[in-house]
Image (cartoon, rainbow, N blue to C red; front, side):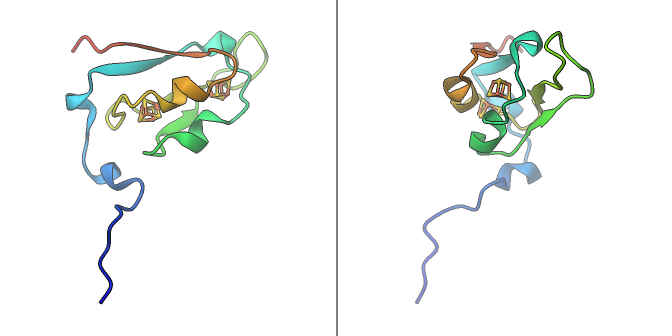
Length: 90
Ligand code: SF4
Ligand code: SF4
């Protein structure tokens, strides 16, 4: 008998999680080189490019706060310090 021991990724796309977040990422658009690393590590798959060119001539990334859990992974991996975690003042 197979027993599932892991949860499929992106499950919270069906269930908004923004209300129980303590920290939230702030995406500093003008520091983003659009390297594409942060969307690969986000467990919720909610980091996307925005439709506005920054001062580096790139399309920077941001996330959907309806689903961001504030896990900080995106900020940890950004090699350009273009994401900082801050207290979520809801
Ligand atoms: S804090 Fe976590 S859930 Fe939120 S955008 Fe970054 S990696 Fe995704
Ligand atoms: S890891 Fe940093 S520089 Fe790379 S796309 Fe994400 S925010 Fe931009």
